Length: 73
Ligand SMILES: [Cu+2]
Image 1 (cartoon, rainbow, N blue to C red):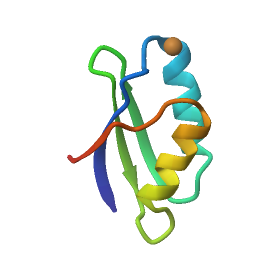
Image 2 (cartoon, helix red, strand yellow):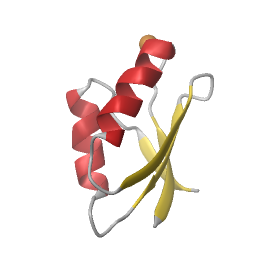
Image 3 (cartoon, rainbow, N blue to C red):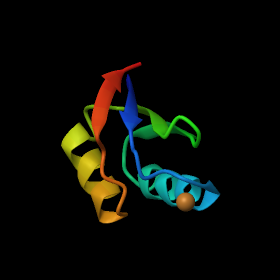
């Protein structure tokens, strides 16, 4: 299991939180998603054998929330 913090500058409200949470939890291997609206970050816990960070970036880009940076948690 890996945990990362994604910086997503376009997060602004609870709608963003819901859209991101739903998009990520629909992916295989996602264990936990926690959106921090004021910090504009997403804490993501996932199984790296089932999901790649490239895929995570693609999923969020499709939702119009591009990932600006990825930090180890
Ligand atoms: Cu929003």
